[in-house]
Each structure stands twice: as C-alpha cells, then as structure tokens.
Length: 312
Image 1 (spheres, rainbow, N blue to C red):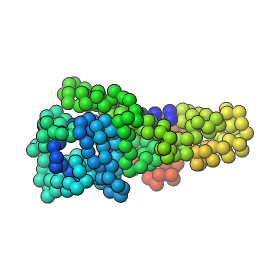
Image 2 (cartoon, rainbow, N blue to C red):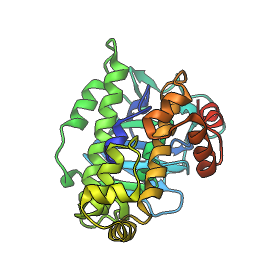
Image 3 (cartoon, helix red, strand yellow):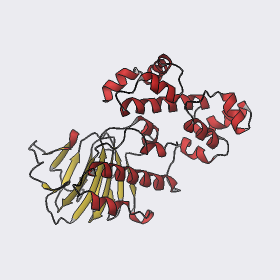
C-alpha cells in the first residue's frame, strides 16, 4: 500500500461533515473549525478563499480546493466582504458576536445558506480527525491547493452533488466513500502536474531501485526486514541500496520502515478501541507489544495507550 492508497485505508471519513451551501452576496465565513483537511467544490457561481498567511485565491465553477488545517481561513463572495459568520470546532455556526445560526440558515437535508436559490453553490466535505498514515502526505501539502476545472475530468463532483441531499438508509457511509474518492482523485491529479512541488518520497516511487524498495516495505511491514534482505530482494548491494534510497527518499530504508510501521500502528489504535496491542504489534512487524510500545514512545513521545486515549 503506498501513501496515496493509504488515504483510503484505516479510520477515515467516518461520519465526515458534508454540506451543500447556497449563498447570495454578500457573504463571508470565517472557518475556525481546526479540521485537518476540507474539500471545497464550487458547483455554481464562484467563491474566494483567503488563507491566513497567503494571497486570496479565486474559485470558479468546477474548481476544487483542499484546505489544510488547523489554521483559520475565510471563504467569501469577495475579498472585501467582512466575515459575518464563524464556523467553530464541531461545525458550530454562529454570527461574529456568537449568535447560533444552525436553525436560521437551515435549508434542508445537508443544505445550508442564506438563499435556496443562491448565486453560489458549494459542496464541502470536512475530515474532522486525521489518520496517522496520511500524516506524511498531508504535511507535504500547502495550506491551500486548488485544482482548476479544466485540469481534470471526473464524475465524482456531480455524483456527490446528487447524493449529498439524500436521506436514505446508509447515506452517511455512501457520502464518506464519495468524499474519500474525491480527495484521492484531486490529490493524485495534483501530484501528477509538472508544476507541483512533490516531496522526495513521492518522486522516489519512479526510481528503479528506491521505488521497488518502498513498495516492498510498505506492502509487507510485518516481514522481518533488514537492509541485507531488502537489498537481496532487489538484487543490489547493501551499500548501493542504502545510498540510493537515502538520496531519493530522504532517510535510510530502516528508518523509513520504522516510521511506516508506527504510522500503521497509530491508525490501528484508532480504528478499533478493542484491538489489542499484541495484535497490532504482530500486524506491523514487532515481535512483542513491549517492543512496539517502546518504539512508539521513542519516536512519537507518547505510549500507544496514551495516544489512543488522546485521539479517541
């Protein structure tokens, strides 16, 4: 499993926040929900996004943006429009002075705004917790990225637009999966663009030596890998593998493996609170729960138990 595929694995998009916004100018929303990542698609009209520390970005119809938290940002009809709405943690919506707007602006199933015939219609999907496997990928993203409508072709946005207003049995699960697919499709397209500053570990996948080594480590984390056994699988000397891998990925093979195993363990800790540390250790390549716990605390600064309690 590579880092992009990992976005669709583990404790992700479970009851994610999804909303259709219908708005007529003037409107301006200050987003302070501290969510790790949100996907914003404009399906009618236009919008502006004002990041905290970057220039304003215009979104036209069909454009998709990925906003990375936890820093606040503003979404508005015009950069000159002062914020009148604040979106807080837990998707609580108020005026600037704190008046609750959840009922006032309710327009139906997962629909919200100031006008049911609004000039602008946006679809927003928000991941309110981040799985640890995706941390390596998300840290490679800018605070805001925009994929223009003419940069890709996808039926996912029309499908999400249709499904977001349904209230059928199991609809949350349907929307969670659609949001996952939309996020991965946008990121895959964005990373493939020649002007995207992709991280070293992502570019390394196309290298004839580092790429196969990455895939072996990621697809078989429970295997008792050593630098010698990995080099033997690839058919290269130990020294040449270590040098090539470190140059292209940015860290030695065994360091990468440790971080990958602990990322997998972190996701498994959150996926099911009843999963034992012994079971997780076996799945990610540690011989005992103690060995996993010691490595987890050494690298991440907290024990697996404390990590699970803090993120549950």
